[in-house]
Length: 440
Image (cartoon, rainbow, N blue to C red; front, side, top):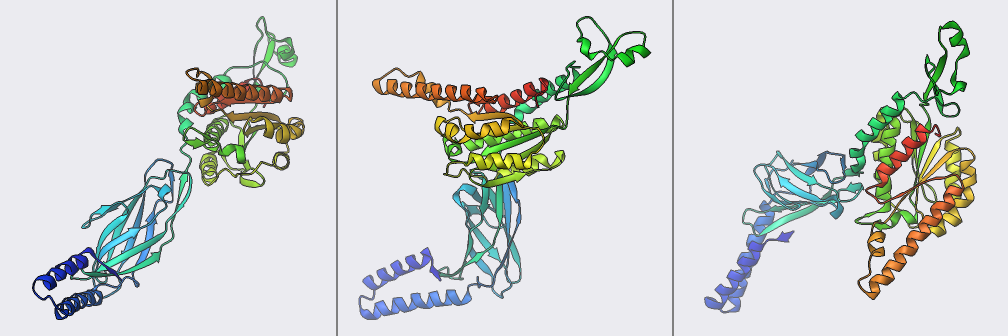
């Protein structure tokens, strides 16, 4: 049960009546009795809320920042009309706002409802999630007001529903230009022997061609000397490894480093799939958080965004030895292993360096990291003593990242270190460079 604002106004009016017309205990009892009678009548005639049947329908997934609609259907099996307010509760990160259908109107998450006996009504809630992951609806509270508007019946219902906020994939805008470069790479006859190439066609020899590419049997059958042309081999393996440990929780701008890593991983996966390569995903800190393996090219991106959506940084130090063991377990043939992690000196030296020989002995390893653009701003500051200290700290941090990068390259590891906006295209470009050099 709940009292409305009208009940408060009625009590205030009764106080004036007692004070001006009936200044006695009799007047007090009379006014209280009338008010109590009105409340009892309202509760008796208000539609029941416990027996309402509520069901949901609508969106199950939405890209971060986009709009999703969830419809709540209210069925009234009782014999009295249910007229009042419905509150559909969602977590703040779901970005819920409501929109009532005819004939009611809405504000925020509160909906005015009017459901006749034996009928049903629909309530529309619009969601614009502000964070990745699963957003689960909370309780639905219905307040059914009586005909006098003094009191209402109130009850809550659990109506389960989950909307998954998927990564936005902002770097998709870089895909057309990288696909154009990929077509150039595939269309150019690269006369290269060795790992990572496959036979393309035969053509006539021209001055400057590598004599090792001459096909003597084809030349014997033809009037001219024929050479073999090669093209980058397709159907190679690319394993994207997301480090979801402590370093991925650091915020760069308004988002954690992990979000920028996810965006870069999606662009690389889309590009590699178009190149005909097989792409798998492993998310790991101390244990496996997500694994996508053996998915067809048409289903890869939807599967990846669905697997990435609930990933959150774990505030623990990543177990690089366990991560390397998972890589070696799931990828037995030579592959390109792309590790999206931090370049902080201590975690790299203590965790990553000891296991790198195990990975580089069997795979081509590429480490990609999210740099903080604020360091460049800090390094340029000279306006005050505090700014000079900040600049010194920024220069030291940048120097450490350069040292770590040089150290990784001694282990024959490719390194991409870029700010969030530049990391996805930089990683895609490095992939194309490795593919052109037949190093996958």
